Amino acid sequence: MNQPPSVAIIGAGMSGLSAASLLRETGLNVTLFDKSRGSGGRMSSKRTSAGTFDMGTQYFTARDSAFSATVDAWLAAGWVAVWQPRLFRYDEHGLHPSSDDQRRLVGNPRMTALSRALLADTPLHSSTRIEQLQRDRQQWRLVDTEGESHGPFDQIIVAVPPAQAAPLLRAIGSLSGPAERTSMDPGWAVALGFAQPLNVPFDAVFVRSGPLDWIAREASKPGREATQNWVLQSTPAWAAGHLDDSPEQVIQELTQALAEVLGQRLPDLSFQQAHRWLYARPNETSDWGALAAPDQGLFVCGDWCVGGRLEGAWLSGQQAAKALLERL
Image (cartoon, rainbow, N blue to C red; front, side, top):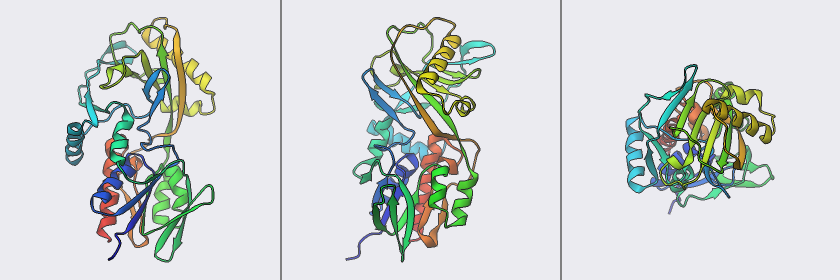
């Protein structure tokens, strides 16, 4: 009896998980590899002594009909929930309510809940950074930074940021070229736990002045603990100028920026932590959807292939998986 084709997916963020879920449904043998300790990529939640903080993606929206239908299924399963924050905006006119009323969704009870649900029982090699792809006759082997070889696999999907994808794709110009020409902006995220509640009328703020880009109260999201935890995210421009700052410096500057936005003295902190995202978001819009070298059994996906956003990552993963299936 013939075995179903084997597929290795490098990257267990949303695009990789999206591709994996579709391929798994068709009966293919799928194995995921990720340099982090778990799945989710920028759908990252950090569990700390002070509670949980969503350090990456804060929420997502659904505009595409196929993605909207999938989100409805996730809602029914309880993997995600609708978040209706008291949303404000801060700009040259100060703090004022935002008129943005689009539906926002979050993982329930944390962002990583969605990635873990999508992962299901798919084998995942975590804390494994793949640094080389080797063509072995009509199959592929993956070599990690420890020199260990994985495979062989019949097909490969690369679902990592372009700076990490380009070295893997170097032998195939049609794939490496777009990756080499695409860059992503960095970002800093800061988790703050306060000893006392902040006296503010909002749950989240779009910041359009200064180093901050976003402010959110964690407890306002469905399923979260009743804490005084907040997450701050910097602008890409500020992060680019402070990439080598220490976490302590970043926390100090962004906390001061928060105080300036609020126009008040902040309560004492009971917890503080910073995380640097080297590849936080694509800095330009692309419409590739996914990239493919079908004759080589090599496919590429990611939010950077289709204009950013979590929805784009899901759509890109679906397109890569469908392109792969068409060649079988």
